[in-house]
Length: 168
Ligand code: 4NP
Image 1: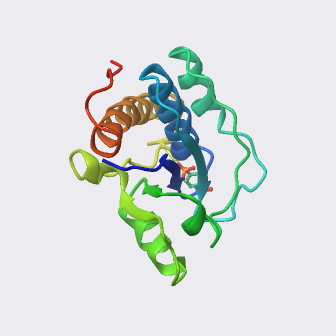
Image 2: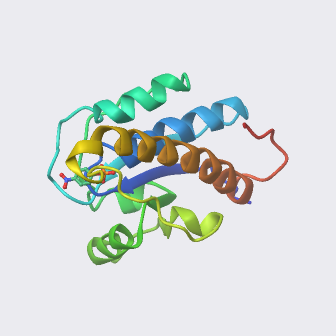
């Protein structure tokens, strides 16, 4: 269990789909547990800097009444000194994080899934074939949301302790 207040950066590629959902869900779950936690998100790429979360990310959070508000940004060297934990959505982003990690990094950089089942959060940005694109993406975003709820609880169980109440 950590002594200092944890501060968490959730990281994916574009910072418009998975990590803004992860940020919103982790904030929500921590609040429901009565925890004081700093949570932000960022992308390893610069593709969408300044953009709002994807409409499908907003829709899924709205469905479960979880507030989501973020402006996409790229991970910076200072993030590795500022945050206690940096959580990568998948292995490719974990590799990219380790590539840009400064020598004096203090953050623990891990696959978010390593707190539960070692599974990555699959990229939902591109769906399947064009004709079913919208529907397959909707399903993918719903899966991302539920995975973020499970991963938020697993992360808080390990880092803050199991003594607080979980959220379904
Ligand atoms: P995210 O999804 O990494 O979950 O935000 C993506 C968003 C945009 C792109 C790829 C993944 N893109 O290639 O533009």
